[in-house]
Amino acid sequence: MPYQEETIKTIVDRLNTQYFLPSIQREYVWKPGQVVLLFDSIMRGYPISSFLFWELSQDSRDRWEVYKFCEEANSVGTHHIKLPSADGIQSLTLVLDGQQRLTSMLVGLKGIYRIRKPRQWANNPNYFPAYRLYLDLFADPNPVEDDNEFTGKPYYAFKFLQTAPQNDADHWWFRVGRILDCHNEDEFYGLRDTEEELFPEGVTKPKENLYERNLGKLYQTIWKDAAISYYVERDQDYDRVLDIFVRANEAGTELTKPQIILSMLESKWAIGGKKEINGLIDQVNNRLTRRNNINLEVIMRSCLTLTDLPVRYRIHTFTNQNIARIEGLWQDIRDAILRTMTLVNKFGIDQNNLTGLNVLIPLIVYVYQNPRVTFLGTTPFEVKNAGRMRRWLILAMLNRVFARGPEQVLANLRRVIRECPPGADFPTDALNAELSRMRFATDLDEKSIRYYLDSEYPVAFLNLSLLYDDHFWGISTQQDHIFPRALFEQGNPDFATLSPEKQQRFLALVNKAANLELLMDAENNEKRAKPFDQWLATRDASFRQRHLIPEEDELLRFERFDDFIARREVLIAERLKMVV
Image (cartoon, rainbow, N blue to C red):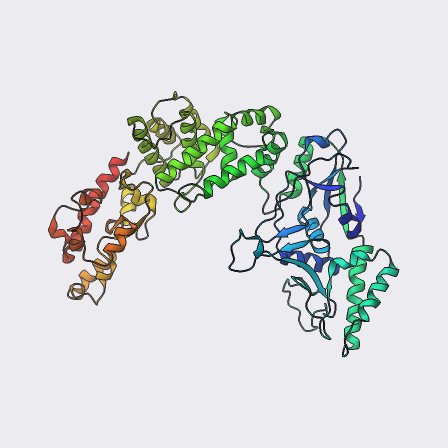
């Protein structure tokens, strides 16, 4: 079937009466400025791209979750409302491409845009007043003749306003949606004349001409011009339509394959897949002891991994049989992800220092195989394997084992873990052997250790955390200079009396890893710029061992700072070699 053309008025009237959205569509994400630019493009006669619709047969429409176009947009996120039933809808049609543009037309003509007031809490509905789209009919849309620079700004004076400003001889604000009342030319001319009678004294003839041209252009654009070109797909084949949808939306910045797959789950799960999975993401990211940043992709990949499906997710992988398998195991999958992320946060790892998401999945697989074990307890099994998982996770991130071929790496590591029976130790040696076979580093060699020692403040938390046991897991810490930086300034007499050569040597060492330690927030604030030897005397005897402080007291004197660094580098290297 060839492309068809319709007016904006005709298409807008079909939204939420004949045209709806499939669950595979993302939420409405356009900002008010984008809506303004769309209306400006329409008024200027610019092409706004074509649209793709899918007309469902009577037999097919019950297979899909159908959502309404939103008439009320929100600046912090707009969620579509599910249609309870498609009963009684004639020629039910789903929009596969163009929902952002169509929703914007609906909001601009019939709806409102709730814009959050600045510096107000997002969860208070009183701070989201309703704005409607207006057009200043006295504004000249033509650019200045000598202004040839393209700015991307609108020419017509569209603007979202909470209330209509007082009109005067310079501005005549017209709510755009009122143009829908002009069902014929007589009604349009009646509206135009009625408005003109309200003009104040002092309105110039050029302003009157602009008013008539702008209002006439708005009427012509909405009611008369065939501004919307669209194609209707009528084939009912599920995979064909999904493929069309992917290709039509592949340039979109928000659309991803996991989102499409999630919507496929939503259409087939009895428990409401989208709500379940989005709820898990929210719980992990916002409701655990630390903030995380897991996303839909890692959840979907975890589902594939734990159900022994191909790790490389493709749309054709999600057959009805495979979707049913994921749904049947979902509660166990969800539980494993939650327990893993709770444990990872206990390690002190969160959105601020987690360098990748795929690296979490081997831990999720192991935790999945050990149901009802939190690895947070004090049994020998839990303590031992929490430590093994923590060390493996940190070294895997430092060695970037998922930097190349992540899907193959994950498939191979899954096989290794699956070979371990429930109750077996986390298979560190077997995993590292597999990674070595794939030519990934699995430990810290001499070169890596030297690179570690040469790193400077701020050092990644992952690096410093290798020096500590579980004493700091889950505790808020700060990187502290053992010898405070304030000592390395000319205002310090001890520093000023050093030779220029020694001053330069000290300055080159002050930010090295060997002069850094992890201190709890309160300890770091207490220590501040105190001389280290004096502050150390106030600490427990175990402090030195925990933080790898040399036993020789003479190395704590400021003039021996370079010797202190050399000795502590030896201690750090020894500790790092014990990690694996």
